[in-house]
Image (cartoon, rainbow, N blue to C red):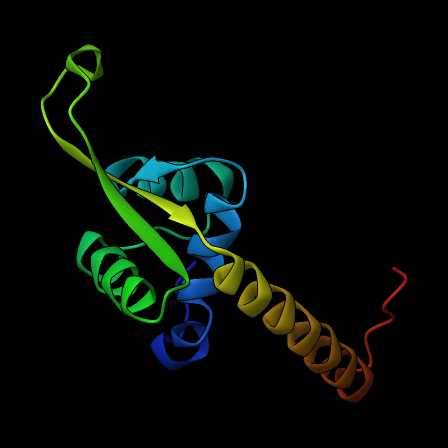
Amino acid sequence: MEFEKELLKGYIDIIVLSVLKHKDMYGYEIGKTIKQENKNFEMKEATLYVSLKRMEKRNYLEGYWNDDENSGGGRRRYYRITQEGLNFFGEKVQEWRVLRELLDHFLGVNINE
C-alpha cells in the first residue's frame, strides 16, 4: 500500500526506535526487520540512514562500530536506543494514542473493534 509521504514523515523515527527497543542492530538489519514485520511498508535505504543520523545527533541513538569477524562482512555500524530515545518514544506513543482516538471518533470508528 502506498502511503502519502507527509503522513508517514513524522513517524519514521518512531518506527526505527520501536525496532531498536528490542536489540541493537545495524542499518540494513533494521530495514529488513521493518519490511518483515509489516508487508505494507518498506522503508527506503536513504530514508532509514537519514533517520539514523538525525536521531544520533539528537542523542536518541548511539552508534558504534562492530569489527566482529563472525559477522560475515567486515565493519558494521550498530545502533542502540538511549534513555533519551526511550523517553522520546514514550512521548510519541502517547501523542499517537490521543491522535488515534481523535481520528477514530471523527471517522466513526469504534476503538474497541
